[in-house]
Length: 307
Image (cartoon, rainbow, N blue to C red; front, side):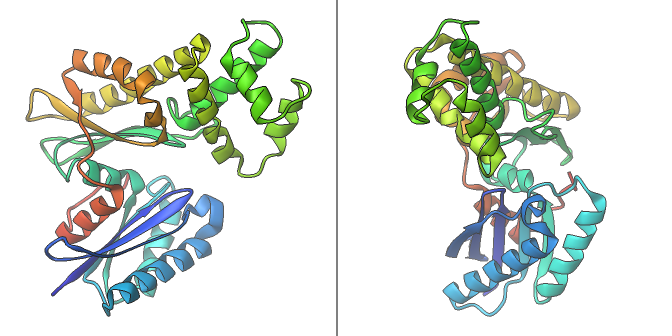
């Protein structure tokens, strides 16, 4: 019996899954995030090698044939890609190791490795697709400083701006204003500045602010509801870009999705579905998880791009 291991790495968590050649999952574990921007090259290599060992031990398996690792930011720095590929291959010598961008394993899991477009709207955002010629294309996913439109970070930042405008009277006070005051126990509105500028894990905290925005939208805050509508438009543009870059065998192209923004699907999906329909795309439920997508890629050893 042969065994295959898939890894879905992210900024906040890393999922490992070991399966046999029948695609039966034998072991699963989860560890902290594995972005080299956060924990460095050495931290990534250490975390992943430890996770592989723990997963094999859990299943009482000595080795696996192949490992597919989805890493955040892979494909965005050629030197770092080469270093990580070399070092991970050296510390996992008994397995064939393949590194891809974490969006690739998301695509593989959500669309079962088939033709279509995968949309990610978590802390960051991007769209990635595979067309009829097995070529891939990507749109978005640049950086939260000047990109990641439609992501939880983007919505969180937009909602913070709405709070400031509600607080100083530029727009009418709504549920968001009162929720922020209560949540952060602000005695004065300007205390919010200190909170935002001094929190740890700034990127994740701004993205997490999206939860307060969602509560405000659900409570009738029209300014926040408009943010979600705009987020759907931004995500649509990413999907449209990918669609236009590739050739397709089907008339209607499936679009799957992952990410925390879709907890607000009531405010996002109707607008997104409406616009996708106009360009011959339709929303579909994810087939499986990203870590299962990594297992699939390890099993099939499918040729994947460095995006």
